[in-house]
Amino acid sequence: MNELTVWQAAVLGALQGLAEFLPISSSAHLSLAPWAFRWQQPGLAFDVALHIGTLAAVLVYFRVEWVRLARAGLDILATRRLASADARQLALLVAGTVPGAAIGYLLQDQAETVFRTPALTAVALIAMGAVLWVVDRRAGEGRPVTTMSWRDAVLIGLAQACAIVPGVSRSGATITAGRALGFDRGGAATFSFLMSMPITAAAAALKAPEALATVHLATVLTGMVTAAITGWLAIAVLIRYVQRRGFGVFAAYRLVLGLAILLLVWQRAN
Image (cartoon, rainbow, N blue to C red; front, side, top):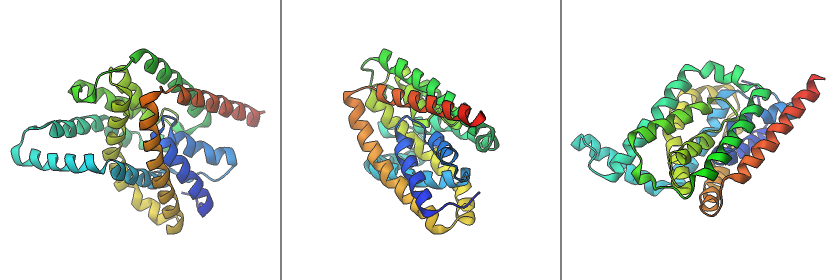
């Protein structure tokens, strides 16, 4: 992995924090920003270090929910059954995490190489933006996530796995899947954010030692702290925003960004 300046790490941290929870693809922004500004690519390990920052944002923002889920986990271990709504929600989060974790592990080499080409990222931004807009417009008000089934959780998990391609967006894919399954905007977004914790923690455990060993500590910490602060703000803004409005503005942003990247690809090729 190549060395970054502290300023570049702060910029990438801010992009990660904002784009991880807004449905606009943090991986796309992290791969495209160095390419567009002609910086050296920091690599997947540094991306994971930034995800630790957004993991902190999820843990802090949803601290009450995580305490309830932790207690539910202890109850499951003690009773060996899903005796409460919290226990069932925890089990659904685990079920939704498995597909993304498995596919991410199997395709981690491709995630760092062939999947990160600017043209593919741009196409994914545009295509997923269109799907998000269409699904959200047709889904209506939706049902609460308390009605989620095992099938629903697994399907949302499969959607999360698609985010291994930069431009798809983990939150965008899971929120879109939730809306397609009939869940309300706020509930789909909240479940998406909670589901990010297990897979992000697993990726961090796998890649964080590499990140800490290959870049300056000040650079990593700058990116992580910036990602944590902007991530917390992004969660707060999105949950309030989507309860009153749809995801159209994010679909439009994805379209504009994708077209701009394709234009830049064409200009550099000629």
